Image (cartoon, rainbow over all chains, first blue to last red; front, side, top):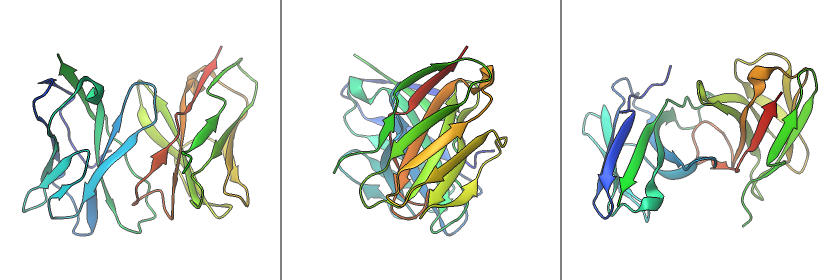
Length: 111
Length: 114
């Protein structure tokens, strides 16, 4: 079973910020939080990852709670091209265990 | 840098046949992992290769096999195809490990078994 819990679907208006939550209450101290997204019929695309501090890159921001039991991916100005399934995954650095992918959140950006 | 290349993009086979899929990783990447994606089961890990050795394996029957060549290119083979093998097969590459680094995925091979 996946180690994360995400809502199955969300809507967001174009131009607004999309906030995607992820619960990972059993996360271990050495596990990172990764976010990927998959646009229909394409391979998943890496977005961002973090350990305990908030992270930002050109695609998104990642906010991790202080107890690390949950996180939020923020797409600051959503566009129609951000419509995709977003996956939140936890994994330890240098781990030999494969990533376990849950069902993700289907994000639909509406004009 | 060129991305991960998977060939062919689409494939149609009949039950009982076998199929070979190919994956060329990003230059310099040594880890290649394979995934099966179906609407009902989502993304499931098949196996990972690193420096020509299988390093990790998911819960799939022995009909699913793979290999990696010295140039890091990888192939996966499915023998005695079943209808349930119809899926999108994805390949991902990374520098060291498929479990804790950024993965770069190809566009996948859509396999249909009739």
